[in-house]
Image (cartoon, rainbow, N blue to C red):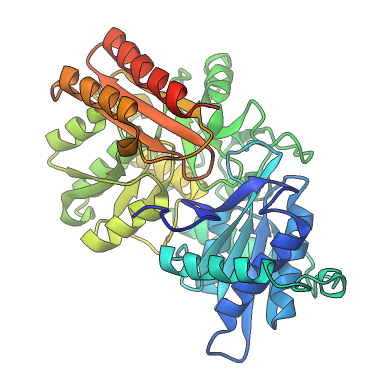
Length: 459
């Protein structure tokens, strides 16, 4: 599926610069109202749970969305600072009509966003998001829809509820059957939402972990750290003199995780899919011997999985689309190169970085092998992803120069590589991904396509 037809919702909720449309005080209040109308449709009362990351704008955006929800009769409870999958867990396990997360994930601190889960813990369908969007625009066009009196209603009964976070942490700890207490782990919390749960979770499992980037100040989320900068973790582990067996790094809202081995070599989501898929397959728990990845996953992991008798399907980029294909096919494992990993052998409904960290550590412990050994046969095709800022997202098929460059690259690769050119679902970016057998060819083809996008669509 695509984002076609929607103007506010992207692949991961509504996102933008905090203080600018659609994240102004007025528009966030109206987003809350429109969502509230959707939740109240056909019922007399509804309750939503809300969580947020550590950006300085998250508190006031949460206030405005909550005021909008309350204005139409939705009771809102706050989990305070909590990971995105933590809110999804609470929505599905505590009988909430919805879970709302104020976060822009891996984006800079100046951005923010609004993600919504339905009461079953799944992200809203595209059709439901479109219906909510239509009401938002209708409210924006109505004079007085966000009048001062309603806007200034205090957020009702929203103390930070540590009990909600505790329930999520306990559910994660209970999902691990192995004793992980001899694993020495360095954990990068990205100065984000994981700072509220990761230390307590690792302590509860007696994992001797050292934590970095756990002092959020509202502006340092993802700043040179976290899953956006896994090299930071890798350098720290490599320079520790063998102090750590494993490194884990989360993004701002901790719905994904990346890793590094004891030598500091980074292992991304492709490597995680490979090692977890093999473990599930060996235990007879990989439904249909199938893994769902995305168009961005490296050909190397597809080849390695095939050698293990495992089929890899490719979904559109975005963990909600990975999940859609998992539900269609019955697959128990899916994920993205960026570190969103979805486990459907349990009750998870979205990518969860904390759960992924525990599952990877569990495989390492049970196998008796290091992370490096578990992915040692993964031969990664040279791959480059080039981001190009664009002024508008015109379908590439309607831009002849770009389309010709893409087709020429595909002819030159002749099946020994891949070209994927797509727009970001959350930013005004075109992403050019090229895989080839040689570094030189990969660089040349990426540069050629990028140049044509810049000429035709660049800012």
